[in-house]
Image 1 (cartoon, rainbow, N blue to C red):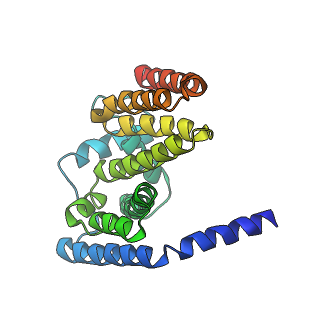
Image 2: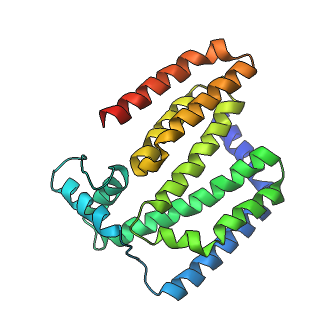
Amino acid sequence: MAVKAHVVSWQARLSAHRAPLVTVGGVLLLAQAVLLFQQRTFVDLFYDSGNYLAVAHHMVAGAGIFNHLRTPLYPGFLALFLTLDLPHPIATAVLVQMLLYGAGVCEAYVLAWRLTGQRWGAAAIATLLAGNLYMLQWERTINSEGITLWLLITLFLVLERALHAPERRRWVWLLGGLLVAVVLTRPFFVYLPLLVLGGMLVQAWRSGRFAAQWRQLALVSVLIAGVLGGY
């Protein structure tokens, strides 16, 4: 009965967002069709693609995750499909990237709605992402930009939950995992854990929750530093 009630509750919540989400989804599908017609290829190679594929093949061959060319997360993502018995592993990886971009658009809608409380305002923001042909090109490319975008949107969605529901500590642990994933995908974001966790400490102090939260934030910070430093 409890599971059924939970499902009914989620259905009621989603019904209020049906029209905005259908609109966003329609724009996303139209943009996908336009992009596919323009490119006429499903997989696009960029100047960095060779490095990512080389590292992925080294991983499959058992060379490990440490490589001077690239950090391991995106090559590991490609290596996963290379190890599977698939007729077109790279095309399958691109298909998953497309699905992740769609998930990122939906998450952008949820994040905007949580921050503004406006369904159609959130739909307008998500539509800007759904219909952005420049951003959509990266999902078809063997490059880390598409997955990085999805990771960043997911990270800030989890950050919003961690700030507004601090009693649910699992959000902070999930946030720590996402911060590690982002840095191991794009090293440019190595500063992000300091900014995010430092900002959370400031917020905890301003809200009077510093005594209840600083230990967990400190432990997550130590674990992130240990993983990234160890790598």
